[in-house]
Amino acid sequence: MIRSALTLLMAVGLPAGSDAAGRDVVPYGPPDGPAFWADSGHMYTVTVEYPQVAYEVPAIGDTLVEFARGFLEPFFGRLGEVDGSPVPWEMEIRFRREPSPDGLVCLMAHIYAYEGGAHGMNWSSSWVYSRREGFIDPVSMLGDSADFAAFAAAVRDTLLDRLDSDSSWIVEGTLPEPSNYKALLPLPDSGRGVRGFRVDFSPYQVAPYVFGAPQVIVRDWPGAER
Image (tube, rainbow, N blue to C red; front, side, top):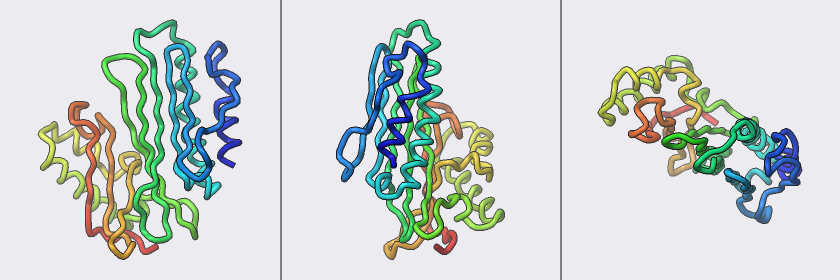
């Protein structure tokens, strides 16, 4: 149950002295819409947003809660070790249900964190849930290893053409390795089959921070039949 899991998420494991330590935390909002969990205290703010499907499918809700815990527990741990910061720290995790082919639930997490310094950081992470099979590795939907390599080459060439940046940076960040494709999702066609794929990259993964978080869409990539 996502509501009880969220209560556990922030009620335990927080640093002594943290304003959030020991609180009984549940997401805001009714269960028929997106749920928000928000908290703030001395020099920090935290927001987590869940989609409706997290309530409808327990496996999805549990997975998203565990993912959020993986960011929030270290965040509060580091906050408890800091004597002071001129600017409040911030952690924002927003889970979005994306357009999905038939039988699949596609989800993307957008994470923003600021812990001092010149700027914050952004990350993305994706999940594909099959109503028949459970969670599917999005990379496996590209096909076999040769298909993965061909897809990665298409992504690389798109970025080489688009970004006026260090080519070696792009090549390294787009190699056909699962760690480079943690934010990969299939795209539905008009008949709700798989038409292509979208991949989001974090700042610094394929280019300097000034280039932001590039996104590449490769259309007409058949993917696995689901």
